[in-house]
Structures are given as structure tokens and as C-alpha cells.
Image 1 (cartoon, rainbow, N blue to C red):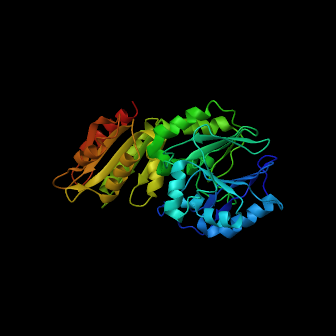
Image 2: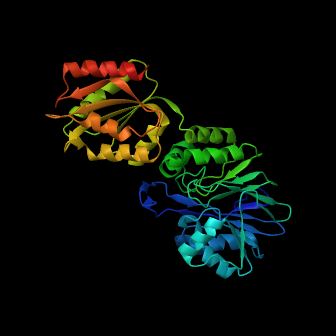
Image 3: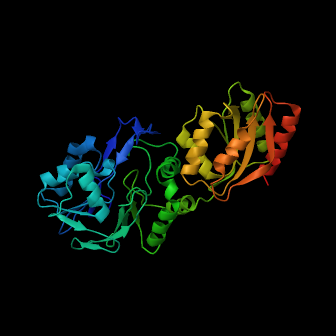
Length: 387
């Protein structure tokens, strides 16, 4: 059994069989569903796990309890990957009390048919739960990324149980060669990113706490270099620029738009661009592309006119960015159209509600194949993107 502190144990599970998280995110390293046990005069269990792992989770709990019985099940978040075994737990431990927000109990009834009116504590901002030596302080975290979310601060061990914040794709028993930030960034912008203002508000609440350990519901427990993780989250939640450089996203039917992108990439590198990230929206993971669009401050979009619109993968990409609150970026446009190019106009229209978005003056218009005039335009666009 893995001890996080002397009194806090890890009781979560690893999912190696999942194909798509939330039905859309590729997770080649699997997924972790985290649950924790706080042992004191009274025992509190922090959250449940996915429905496929109920018995494994109960086994982990029994090992942690070492013959004792739990007093509380704290439910911080009602997404089923964290709440699916509430009924199983409450049936096995009839003396236990559920601790959750008022909205969580409403969702509990909607999901599982029971809101435990006779066995519950309704927690809100500032509510405290005394376990003995350990005192749990609840922090309201609405819309990070559901309305019922609570975070919990253990004042004794200085541990923040952060719900889905600071989460990361990947099972805990599989090493991630990319380190923490890559899959944590993809997780954040895909799942939480729209709610940057709400996440920032919770970070401000957390900034006054003495936090020494962060225990999220997905991904590893964070125990060292916490300013690094908090700093990244501050950048992400404020839609700041994390990496200097240019991200280029394109679609190409017969290779001509791709050729323009290759020329742009070469020119950017020759002109000293610190980093050029190029993605083919038809072939690369869309969630990875969304992640990079938020990571960089300068973005170039290159696509073909298609059915008097734009190529479907580019439309989906831009709509996803707009839906997730993308903002504050400089955008360069490259369009291709054999007889009636409309791609640049359509892309601008799709981005018009993205706050603080500016466009490069140079716009590359390809009429079927790349010409010398286009190469000169691409050179000018590269200069603009580096200013």
C-alpha cells in the first residue's frame, strides 16, 4: 500500500484497457482513477473510481483500513469515473456518511437513484470536517469543470485534494517518456480549458494555503517542485503563452497546401524561430493539436477551400478552439482554392468570437499550385509571425 504521508494512503486503480477517455481522447498509456484514504480517529475515503474497478477498489480500501471501518466517503466530483461505486461503498459500509456539495447530491440521485438523505453531510465553501488530528477544509470549485466540484485541503498534512485539476492522462504504473506536462496539458485544455476563469479563481484560493502535496483524481501525486506545476496551471488558466515559437496547422488534398507549409516551416527556422510545431489535422491527434494551439502564442492556419467552405478537419479544429475559449493569439492564414478561394474568409469568420485574436496583414492565397509570388508571400508572412 502506497503511503503519501504517514496517515494518507493511495487506494486508486489503473485502467489499461480503456480505448478512448470520455469517448474521445486517445490514451495510449491508459488512465488512473485516484482514490485516497485518510487514517485518523475517523477514516475518510476521498472519492470512488470507475465502475469497472469497483471490486479492486474495495480490496484496496480493505487493505488500507487494516480491519477498521470507514466513517466518511468524500465525493468531490460526480463524473462517473469518480463516483460510479458510491452505492457499492455505502452498501458495504452502512455506517458511513457521504460528504459532498448540495449539487453533488442532486446528481447522485440523478445518476444512481439515491441522495442518502439520512447519511450525508452537505459541504460548501469553508465547511470543515474533523477526523481527529486531521482537519479537512472544503473549497468550492464550481465549473472546474462541473458545477458540483469541491476540492479539499487537509490542514494537518498540507495536502490539497484537487479533484480533476492537475490531472493527467496515463496509468500510474506506465512510465510517460514525455514527462508530466505534455499529457497534463492535453488533459487540461481538452477537458477543463473552457473554464480558465473558474480554474484561476480556485488557484487564487489555493495560493493562500500552505500546500506541500497535490492529490489529483487522475495522474501522479505531486510532491516536489510544486511551483513548477502551479506555474504551468497559472499560465494555462489565464490563456498565457507557454512556449515561444509558431504552431502551424494545415490540411492538404493534393499536396500543394502542404508544400506551402513546408516552405513556411523552412523559412521560419532560417529566420531564427525558436520552435516550429507543424500538425496535419487530418492525420494527427486532434487533442494534441488543440493542446499546441493553446501552448503557442502565434499560429498559422493553412487549408483548402472545400464545398465553398473549408476542409472539414480545419473547420472542426477551429470550432473546437472557439468552444474551448481560445484567445489572445496572433494568427496567419494560408488559403488554397482552384477557382473561388474562400478559406481565409471562412476561417476569419469562425475565429471572430475568439477574444483578443489578431491577424497577420500578409495573407497567402494559392490558386491550385504554389507560385513564386506565393513564396514571396510566405516569406513576408514568416517575417510577420516573428515580429
